[in-house]
Amino acid sequence: MNKSISTLAVGHASSALLAIVFSLCVIFDLLFPGYAMYRSWQVLLPGFEWLSIGSFAIGLIESYAYGWLFAVIWTPIYNRAAATASSHDCCQHDHHSDLQAH
Image 1: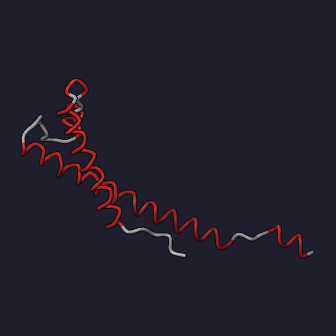
Image 2 (image 1 turned 90 degrees about the horizontal axis):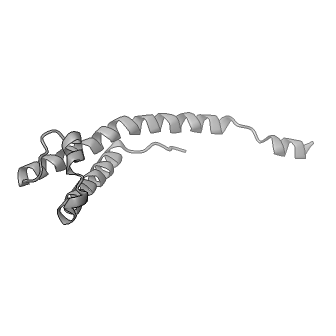
Image 3 (image 1 turned 135 degrees about the vertical axis):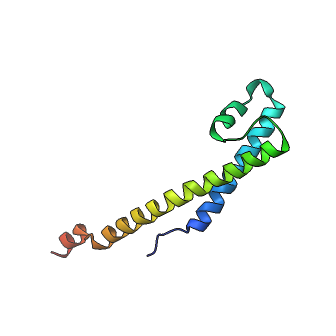
């Protein structure tokens, strides 16, 4: 059984999630300036400033890029762990059924 996952799928899904979360956070900051988080975005996203179209685009692009960074690192780790777990699963023996046979 192949338990590996696609880096392409994880990259697009993670990147889309982070871009959507970034966009929702910007909307939240505009609606509730007293609870604004844009200072955090300024630290995490180089070049992002509050708020212009260009700055929003930079934040969106960098959010998307962070999703790919996650995918490129996490997917091979997951696939390696899944392959290792799968190889151990196939070699395990059901001792309970051996006891019943005797």
